[in-house]
Amino acid sequence: MIGSLRGVVESTHENGCVLDVNGVGYLLSCSRKTLDRLTAQDGVQKLLVETRVSQDAITLYGFADATEREAFRALIEVKTVGPQKALLVLSGLTPGELAQAIATKERKRLGAVKGVGAATATRIVDEPAMQKWAVGRATPDPDGFGAGEDAAIPASRGAAADAASALVNLGIKRPDAERAVARAAKALGEEAGLDDLIRGALREVSGR
Image (cartoon, rainbow, N blue to C red; front, side):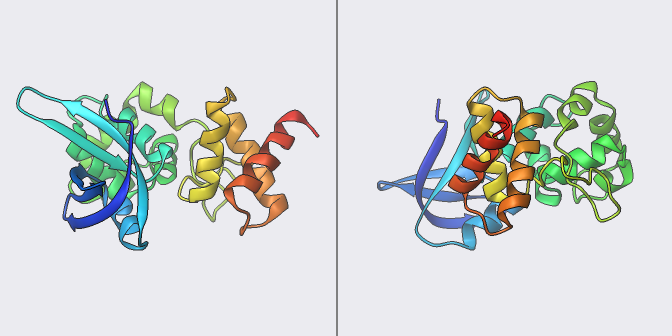
């Protein structure tokens, strides 16, 4: 199975892109947010990949970061929410915004996403597995939801999300990783790079 691809975006279309990897064009289905990130940059880019096999097709789904792929994997486990509808959800909301909508049971906010609808929004919000997934992933809002020094980081911040994923890969629980990265980001400033965030977060975890 393909876990990731690194190449140059050859073309984009409404539901994805073609990624040229050493002369081979891979057709990937992507969210609008991932496509926006791809088109905002030039040169070689990396996409994480989820491979889904059905009776009549093998489909590759591309993601800008691990946070979005995790949200996709969680969404497709909800009854009647298939891969394409999951991409619609992630085109309208970042993973952090989705987690916030689920945690606060904002069915209208989720249902307002183009192509989702009220019935699907209710299924997603009421799904126990999605409620569990949302814990520690919600993006703080201006009214103070999740605010504070130990708040979870906004998943839309690429470097912070990647740093949190790196800590998770080291065996640290995601809520603890996100809190550590949030504290490191606060100490280092918004312009801190990925390596600095990882080192700072590891110091936070170790208490040094």
